[in-house]
Length: 581
Image 1 (cartoon, rainbow, N blue to C red):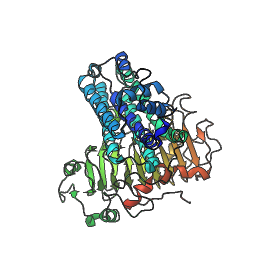
Image 2 (image 1 turned 30 degrees about the horizontal axis):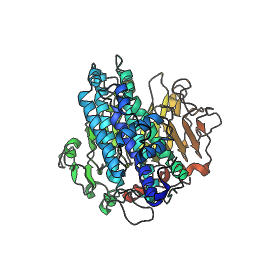
Image 3 (image 1 turned 180 degrees about the vertical axis):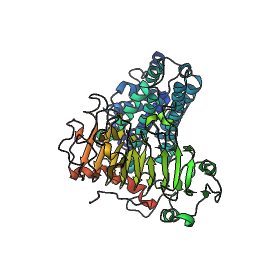
Image 4 (image 1 turned 90 degrees about the vertical axis):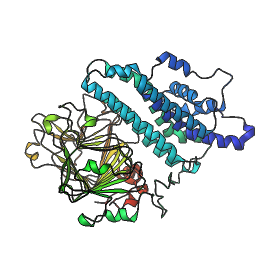
């Protein structure tokens, strides 16, 4: 298949590159456009999305056919892209058309879809509907940010462009799945109807991941070389590994803040329970954050227990919160599933705005083991950092929901699935502490939620310690503890260079239900130590892999979350590669 006449090689070659490079972004926009459903029936939608008649296939259509080749849902891919693209071939105009269509469909769906209105019949269903609304708006925001960050298309930066698109597409997958998860415990057929509405959306998301994952193969088929120089996408947000430039939101003052404590901290706003700051509550301080801020805004939270539910929304970007220590500055709450709140909304603290940093703070949910899902911290923030923080709870303590996250010198405690979610998250030098559960419960450290094999997500525990709380240890034989279990079909967790105590069961990994995902998950333990690190009696699932240390570099922070680009400049202690222990 060719893109055009060979008589215009120069212009056609440039057009090929531009169309291939941006069509993946068009698909991402279309994912959101169909994600919440709309008033037209499926038959009408397919009619409207039919490709043009034979004999009138445009250059755009040929490009669409080419990029849809590696997808799992090719017809859906071609139909939806053809509808959005029309006869336009200019890549910037294609992106604009796709964004406008996506926003238009979402706005119409939220306002007018009779199906969505019918879903809100009981409290849990009403919550699920509200959550879907919020989650899909996050996806729109990601698309808009993507457009602004990419700037002029540059073939030399295509590899970084692909890396970022995979993260953003993975977040879209997560948002859709989180929406559906919210209907699991609702009455009536709301869940099945929502699943039907999201079917095309999920196919398109999968197709998008397929395209950006396989784009190098497509380029090779047209003899277009991929640049693998690892030059970074945008100096506004990233720092080149060999450059002295740093992201605009990082400054020397921020670096110094990470090294000082107490009265020496120069903050934009101070919160203090005793009245010695500008505000007595954290939520009051949030009002001072400039919307869509591009410079670090520092909130110093003096020691004290702050019983409040805190959310940094998507507009509260580049925020740094510094406390007096994770046992001195505590943010606490007790929302939980048993008392009627869906898991997504139980978090004591929710971080959505990008480029967030927390240091010396404790995040806590005190609901206890009898209340089941009760999140202490939910992190959606892309390029977020948690340094010397505590996350304490029981079931579902830390929700690593989406995007890229880095945890350094943190302590996370809990009972069941107490580190869970679908972010690309790296934990360095952290301590995972198993707490005493209910009488008949097992304990599970991780439950990673990857639903598509191409997602660029997973949990990486590097040079961490997995141990038990003193109150748990006498019960370790009865209430066995496991490294993880596969929450979703392609769950991925890597534990390397870490110390594992003997409270971890010899089997290591626990099934979720029967044989679900035991052949499709990806679990590996690399060069660990301690009495619980012996792999001789580990489960013999196909999904539990033996990865040699020589291949461990692909799970380091510099590779897995491209941490050299955004973590190094902050001054947070950070190891980009392997750790020798």
